[in-house]
Length: 241
Image (cartoon, rainbow, N blue to C red; front, side, top):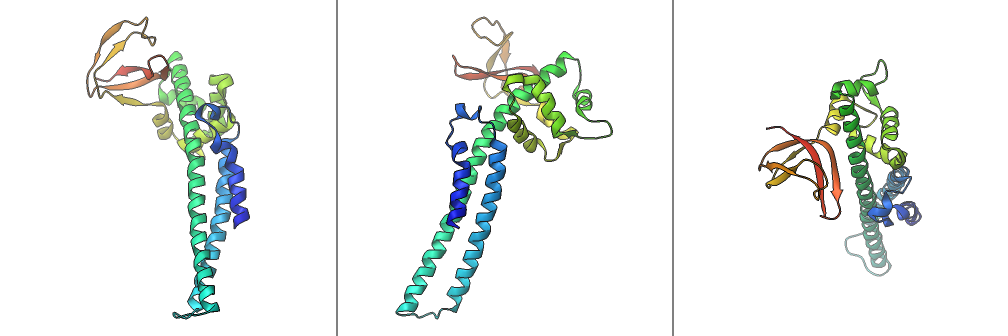
């Protein structure tokens, strides 16, 4: 059990130690995640077997024990407590891996969805027509391979195969249906505080067109893009009012 837990921690050590800035260059998060899931399952099974054995031995002890029997009971209690600690460690380790992977998915999703929306708009396609461009003949879903090929072609050097693999897995396991693809590309924002709508991204050169009203719904067309000077993200969108 200890050796299996050590193997799990060693497998994820590099990934979970990375900062958000370092994560974007990490090439194999999907492989690490899959390895972590496999090792965690092995450790969990070992822990469950150990707990079952401990419970059986505790059941054989009399309620009132003295001497060596009392010591045996204390040892079994320690073993049971250790098994619970291992369970908690497995969970915290997997949570750390999933947190890192989720950050990568969000970054990849922003880049890929923005690039796909831009391509769709430049070609004058609606989502259905764009979906059909990515579906193989005779299929009704986009394969992960086809999705990743298009993503690679659109974002170029920023593309990381396993980052895109994580994204595909989150959109829909196996292959991507119309509904899930539409949900991925179509994003909406609701205005919670009045803010200026400008004619371009850079605020320093932009002209204010009007003020967005509270509860106004905007369909995302491009972005979000980070404005490091202002410490905020901005989008290009279409008002649905």
